[in-house]
Length: 130
Image 1 (cartoon, rainbow, N blue to C red):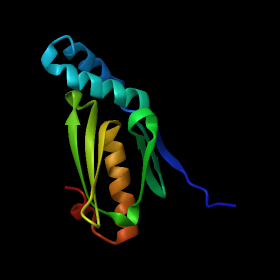
Image 2 (tube, one colour):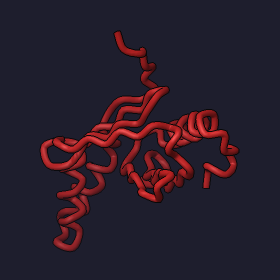
Image 3 (tube, rainbow, N blue to C red):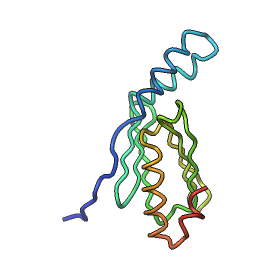
Image 4 (tube, helix red, strand yellow):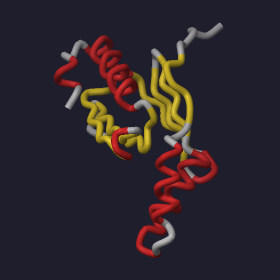
């Protein structure tokens, strides 16, 4: 029997990201952004639990990345869509980065992840939040 995880958030990117990019897609210049938003809407999924962060994405959702809170050293958030959703970049101990785009409830998720990472690593929350 495995250890039970409590899910804080599970779902895809914010629907506003898709809507805005589809509207911008009527111009040829923004077409690559529109295609990216459609791919994210179809196959990108986030799962934030009390033990880890899982991101499933890539073509047809075939790629999966799992990180545990003890590996996190820094988190940066950037608001998008007039603050309704945002992007997050999580830096790991080995200097690699996990980018999470169009995250709904990104302020809550940012605080939750930073708090868990601080508890697990002993790094002050002010240092993790950047």
